[in-house]
Image (cartoon, rainbow, N blue to C red):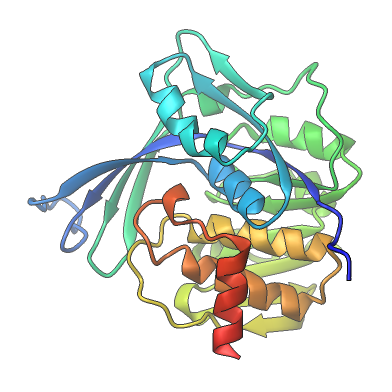
Length: 289
């Protein structure tokens, strides 16, 4: 059997440099926890999803903004070496590259504070995008930019409604795929049912559930893995699920694949450094059968 044609994916989203502090436990409000180990990793939800989709077999173009500063190349390093197309990743003078400050506890749970910098300057006016089968977006860039590109895109449109914020109804109605976690699902409530597409709620180690309207169309458990750092797991899930649906997989099979990919992303430190390759996910699924 011949290999399926390579999917072309555009990801519109954020690029950050992640400053990760590993601690024994996350602090309570007002508390200082000392003894952390600090490391730096490329991150940002857009960049994570772009590299995840590329590693899972797609051909990916990233539309994003970075600053013209010392952090930009470090933030783009793994995307570049992973052969993600960065032609539409714009450097802005006199603007800082986005920074995420992440605390990761010994059980893998995290707290994240983002200084968006160049990400909030993304403007798609006058930009001619490459042709693609799939468009993936998140909410770490201006919503108006996403609304404009979604309005003019005629392929499969997937939006990860994270971090939770108010979004125009037309963006939800346009979506073929919506991905949220449990906290985001509670924030949006019934408003995310205003789509003819599939709405997926991820539940961490408990897996994920997919609905169309009020009907559950698939539910999947995550494979049991040794959790090191959950950063990037949701981004991996989003990229994997969108890729599978674009390849016309049944929803249940797509959900199983995405849960395995998301789980594997928790087994290593950092966001992009932990993203699995296609063979990793296939091996994981074969072992769990």
